[in-house]
Image 1 (cartoon, rainbow, N blue to C red):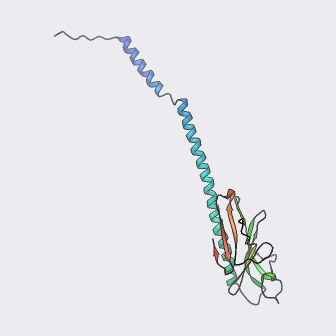
Image 2: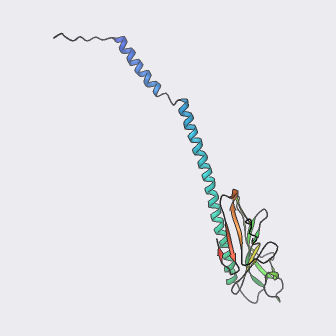
Length: 205
């Protein structure tokens, strides 16, 4: 058998080793321009989606909180009327009045009789200087107002004991029957809903 021969070429080995190192160095050098553009594009799209989502979520949370708070204020006015009724004082009852012009707000108020010799009807109501019990400015991004085609927007509502009887009037003092409402909405109309009060005192939202 012919013996096998081995040879060593130092220059070739050096060249192969150097080339291998260079190829490794190039692969670890970084992303290509196209890869960077793709990553940046995806990042921008995801950021836009998250910003829009967070903004909408904040509006929905603020709307939900304010809607419940407004309903609670109306319920507190009703509860105060039931608990504070004394026939010998000039307080007719409690209620809520709404301000639709800027700055928009709603207030829990005490209605006193203009004349103690006249029965407590809405035409005999007044809110004295100390009659505002609680006042709430609407948060930025939320508004109250009417719904197109529905004219029963509540300007003021009042509860008069002992039942209590519920009075609903619009901004001009006209009686609303059989119910009135307040529409609460977020900026841009992303979310909206109504709080309705009937003349029977039923509050729905």
